[in-house]
Length: 331
Ligand SMILES: Nc1ncnc2c1ncn2[C@@H]1O[C@H](COP(=O)(O)OP(=O)(O)OP(=O)(O)O)[C@@H](O)[C@H]1O
Ligand code: SF4
Ligand SMILES: [Mg+2]
Image (tube, rainbow, N blue to C red):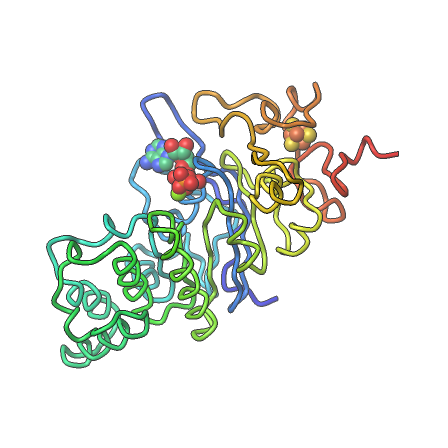
């Protein structure tokens, strides 16, 4: 397939007071033009850091390495900072987790969207104004001509996120990265924003990377899914295959925690995964998921697994599940 994004072995290390910390460890991502890829995983699994690395937006304490980091035919690692800035914001844009804190409170909405256009296009002021109104209308902001002059604090959370999306779309990017774009919003607004993103993705023929910890959202939207855990990619698959036959115990546990499953078996409680994602100081020696895994053995405690081959679902596990059963234990 021709790739819009082709990332291999993306690794991000932070220098911290407690020593070096690997927040993203060897993540691979492939995305075709027009494709929707979901990255899922609990808090702290390195989803945001991986995407910020791609955008070149991490602080100086971060060291980013990769075997390959190609976007639309450009090797991002080899571009000069200037050349990279020209691509980021124009061909590759990002909608962030917190719409309220991502907009600058000191400038009007119209000015902020216009800035992106001024930086990346040759449009004059009049043309920029017209384009800003067009963008605001496109993301469903009523009375767009008047909203140009409002400040972010005058907008609701949902409206702020629409403005952020308009800003990201300003230069018609080929790739949009949406990092938990609905987490900070009311439930009723969440569905609207998600629908808007998917509609724009289809209309503009964009690649969309959707970061979420909600597998319900993934089921409705994504073509392919990457599951991350504690900085590692533990499984990647076509969305329907992943839902039908998850190979990594973590993926299976995430699926079992979906509300639909609780409803199906009549139980009121979700099958929550015990414990939490290990951080900088409590990463286990063997498999990172071992302390929480229902299938863990002594080998899992002692030895980090390597990625199983394609036939076994490319899961990072000593005993990938087949139809819910660890491979080695099957008759
Ligand atoms: N600037 C930084 N310096 C040191 N560690 C960092 C920095 N930014 C993030 N981290 C650490 O990297 C790990 C991954 O963080 P990241 O924000 O990517 O998680 P996430 O998967 O996006 O989680 P969430 O679902 O909460 O957004 C975390 O352990 C976090 O504490
Ligand atoms: S390697 Fe072991 S602990 Fe890790 S996910 Fe697989 S079965 Fe569970
Ligand atoms: Mg995040």
